[in-house]
Length: 369
Ligand code: KG4
Ligand code: ZN
Image 1 (cartoon, protein in one colour):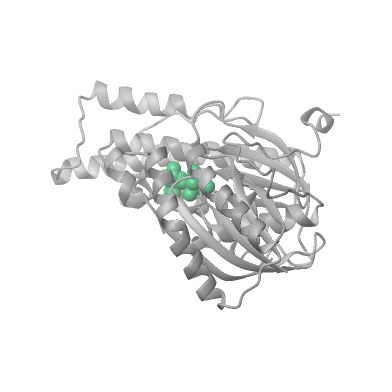
Image 2 (cartoon, rainbow, N blue to C red; image 1 turned 90 degrees about the horizontal axis):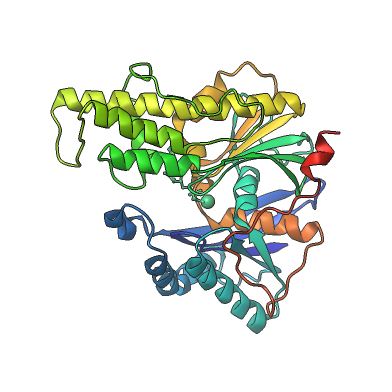
């Protein structure tokens, strides 16, 4: 079947057409088109996403993005299902995508399904992906190994989800405060770097010494799989304050520039350490056969390298670069899984939910029996 995916949860307006087959046993996807219109430049001067500005821009863009996605997929394209992100995300932004999808569904009489954005990030791994330490090229082959552990690291979320099968999730850990991507963005601001901070710190860290400074990896030894990143941001604040270091976006001396690269690399190391340590510990405890990584921070080269050199004998999968940050192809893929699992929505009743959580099939306590 052909799925029309729609994503407007934050600051990317995206529409995709994805061909899906294989059902829940062996889902396979091929992306016919995936158009992403980013608003990064619009929000950069504010150092973060402005919700109402984002929604207005989604409204302005969505028709054009839809038209392009149709054209790239072949103008006669006829979807069998409309999958739209219903949350989590910014309410004004979500409203644009959900109501656009509802109108399309009403006028064309095509079924509609609301998708959890994080499920989208998980299923970005099934689109086309690079395997890290993997003999498996694609987890959508017959060899998909469950249980799998999904590490979602984005601007708004940091979660560890155990998957016993397709569409079946149990949250075994999450951040108690800031998300990993949010921490990258806030620290980038403290270091006088631009927005979004993650990719800039990643690039800068490549030129720095990651062992120059020690930053804490919060909760690394806690006896659970939860995370916390706000303390790390605070320790960066104190680190800079104690040394009277003020970094601005203006040109720095080469000594200062080197120092900033060392700080960025050391900070990134602290984040990566805790993410990898906890993920591998959870993988061991739940005896998983595959690790899937998703969300914007999955693009981080330090994170990818750390998993690459980990002493494990099962695959760690990252999405292909084009599907790592927010896009509608991943929403279409997750929509297919939801639909194949029997979930249904209607154009009349589907509403956005800014705080949507992934529907868990099992409950946490069951796992500990
Ligand atoms: O998944 P995403 O595109 O949007 C959300 O759902 O939040 O993730 C965006 C986040 C931002 O915080 C951004 O700084 C971070 O992902 N990010 C990175 C990298 N690329 C994007 N963080 C670290 N390293 C990167 N290379
Ligand atoms: Zn996202």
